Length: 285
Image (cartoon, rainbow, N blue to C red):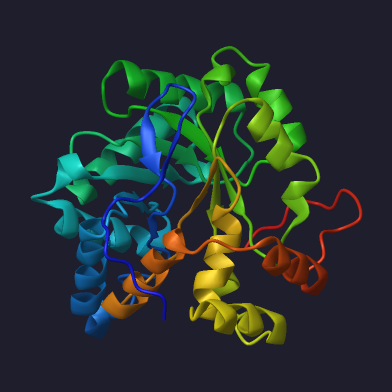
C-alpha cells in the first residue's frame, strides 16, 4: 500500500476564493453500529492529523447520529475543520432550512457550518431554500451554501434565481463506474469555477476487484482503492469525500493524494471503464 509521509493535502478553491482540501472525509453510514464508534472516532481524528480536514455529514445520516459523532471528533479542533452538512429536501422551506441548520449545529456542537448543502432537489421551491440559506449567511451560521445531486438543468435554473449565483458547489456521485457527469455537468461546474464534490468515489468498494484496476495498482505498489481515488482526484477542481470507519482505511485513502497516474494508466482505465457516449440522467445512491 502506498504510504504518505506528509500531512499537507493539495487544495482547491470555492468561487469565493476560500481554500479547502481536495480529499476529505465522508460520514455516510457512520454512527450506525455502537460497537464501531471508537474506531470511527479514531479514524476521523487520524484523517484530520493527515490533512483531510474537510468533513462531510448530513442531518439524514443516522437521523443526526453522524453529526453527533462528528461533533465529538471536532470538539477541540473546530478551527482546523472545513465542516459540511446538508438539509433534507422536505425541510428546505425558508423557515425549515433555518431550523434544520440550527438542529445540525446543536448536534455538531458548533456555532457555524463552513458549507451547507441542499441534499437533493425536492418539492419546495428553490427560491424558498435560497432565502433560508441567505438568512443563515447573514446570521453567521453558515459561511457558504451549495447543492447536492443537481444536474445541469437544475444548476441553470438555480443560478438564474435571485441569489442563486452564490452557489458554491455541487456534490454528486462520481467514480470510475459513474462517469456521466463528464458529459456536461463537470464542464458546467468548471466553467463556473465551482468545485465538484464527488461522493462514493470508490463505489462503496464494489469496483475494487476489477482486473484492470488491480493491474494499475500493482504497477504503482498501491491499492486498487488508492488508484480509484487518484483517478477522481486527477481533475482540477474535483474534491473526493470517501468514507472510512477505521484508521488504516483512512491512511490508505490519504495515500491516494500522492499517487500520480500515468498516461498509460489513464488509457487503460478509460478502456476498462468507458465514459458514456452521450448524456445520461444524473445518478444517485
